[in-house]
Length: 564
Ligand code: GLC
Image 1 (cartoon, protein in one colour):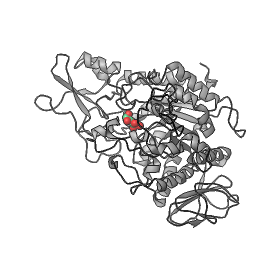
Image 2 (cartoon, rainbow, N blue to C red):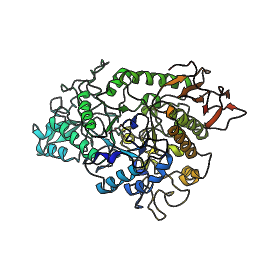
Image 3 (cartoon, rainbow, N blue to C red):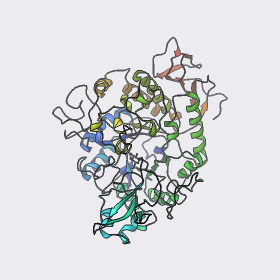
Image 4 (cartoon, rainbow, N blue to C red):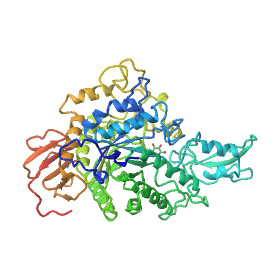
């Protein structure tokens, strides 16, 4: 395999070096593609790889460096594809492996790398290993790849532990033996359709290492590692301790997990252009989080600390400082994430009374001021694009799409069902994109396309790509301009941030030689620091003042005494 396949053929800006850039991931803009809802090439109502291929020019024009695809593998879709039945294939509703290979190389020809989603914690209950385990019965070697265990109580009727699923409810489901009698239980940290793998088993390790090579050999530049702090379990299967010490939780962030990622890093590093590991690591303890980013482990991990902050200058500034401080000792770049396919859209989140994010606080009918949320999301877009490190952009956020409040009968997300219907779940941020302001699926499919798999709210039509592309004041125009400026200024990569003195409600910092970003989160306009030029602003300046809930990017006199 020719490793040079990873070097973009044509850098999109003259300022970019033509040599393969092995450090691209330190300051990349990575666009998250939720294939099912991005673009529907065959008009059947479901997004697909043909749709993505047709829209690659849009992504190149937006100015992104890489695409991260949510799982595109064959799957019964019990959890939006995070229940993988075959890690080496493409779901037939999305296309074929040949199409995926074509997509990877076509994207690269436009200077865009590809990241695929790897799901190591669990497989689908339809995966051949789990089917074989069920068929082989208790005590069989096939069952050792999972966590099968007899129940407690007189007849084995009690779940082996009191662990709580990330989707609520128990983490155990009882099986029925081949002879029809109730049998052992199996562990699933998510839904019963997602049995957890036993990472102490050599087959599990070997299989995932082989899957990594499979995708790396097809030219993908990296992997996003799903639920990356969860795969290793305490073999003793203890009850949940009240306050587990770091590393002592029975199924979160166990110390042994790092061996897995060291082995993966060695594989990633064995390619001429090293591949990149990005972790989905939800951990509150900053020091424990940073351990995943040591030089021989992952390259980066999602920064959920910043994403979950409320719209509050002090909280956000603290989070930025904490993030940079926690990454520095391990030499890893930070990442900046405003949302993803699990999170309420920023426009909606920032338009609510509770502007932070917590899974357990989602409710139907939460009052939302979308105009306010949109102003803030625009400000947040510029704020995050100016911070040092990698920027993630979830599809549709560049259009300022709101979270859709879907009718209950169309919701598919298991989070909704496992909450007893209380939590609307995550489908509201997974609604098919509007490409045009008219037609059956707003340009998601062609003119005669089937209804999209989730209904698009009326509010999506004016936010369509076609409309925003023609409007210099649109969210799309703002993102395009921001990503172009970010690309042109080397000072906006992974480097030093120097705080500027600013009122409490304002977040202001310098980057590079002469760039400054100022965000006003307060209720009154504020004066801008001395500058020679306003490069970009998320809202019109009023008499030179920065209005509430907005960000301005400035050219300032070359740096003075500030320090990081
Ligand atoms: C991750 C994914 C989420 C999925 C879960 C289980 O958190 O982002 O969508 O439901 O893992 O795989």
